[in-house]
Length: 279
Length: 178
Image 1: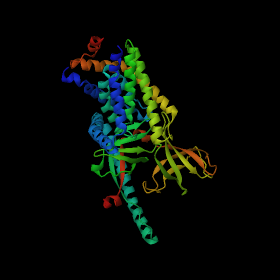
Image 2: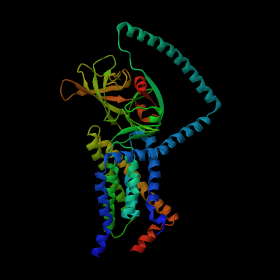
Image 3: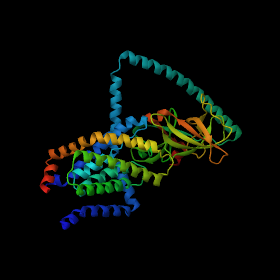
Image 4: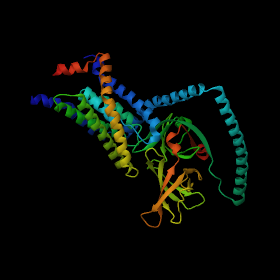
């Protein structure tokens, strides 16, 4: 009986031995295995994203002609507005380059936009990330900023062949320098996760003591452009509350991020043109 | 023992893959609520209770690698968590006289909570303590436990049925062993 029991425990000893062996496996083997497993299952998640698109297509096909006509009319209005805005932007760009040459200022970094569909959203208790359907084959560089119509989404944390992983703004490991609109003093920003059934949040540190929050018109937080990753002036969120910081010289504040961050279906990756030409 | 029976872990691993895929889609759609359903405990318990210790571990290895390839923790974290818990459940299984559905559900729930705890400890160690919200972790653990409690019996029976279709009669084998 005792012999039989000891024999039954043999597989457990094997499992423990495998676990110990795994700890000593070289890093290069682990990273190759990780990459291989990721690339192996990537088409499955990507296919789910294509199926969702097909679903949307058929949902749109089921709309009536009058609904489509109304949507077309709205789009025509939007197109007219955007055309005007393009003309305005062109005039402003010319004005900026004229002033830059007059004042001898260095030119601003130029970016191209790579639009990508969201494949998976992983917003759990420990990390927040998105998987997008563009990778190294589409020229996505590591660490590139990711934006959408509502401002900053995050930055690229991993690049694979056909897909990339985006570290979200609400992720607590993402930090950057930010400013309050109309105030040039830099502050520190870090993600602070999700409030259940509410929008994602962030934390602002080193907020000057003279800054106050008006709940009816909360101050807008923008990227500062420092650090060279995110271009200056991109929308982050609104500062909703302030409390005295631990040092006593500054304040800490809560930033309400864009609620649409948790519903994203399409994002744009900013690829620096300088980086592109260097490559 | 035929080839299919010897490689039954592969069939179970494929079932786990499909389940993970379905739940990643569910999590995609419920992301706006801040709730995340983690069903790793359910997969782990079904492997541990349906298969032998070695076959169960083999079925969990590809699942653990699949999870590990997508998370920001060091590669192998899920492998250590799943294989370790599988070992504990298999040891527990060897000590009990009679397996019941209720006991299996309790084991699955307990395993799921331990998986939450293990991920929290790993992210604390590798990603830092900032942003770890105990309330959110508790709500997610409760939501996941609810899903596991509702689905575990159905899931494990489905696996047994799939194995049965392929000619592997798990319950008959365990009766013969006794």
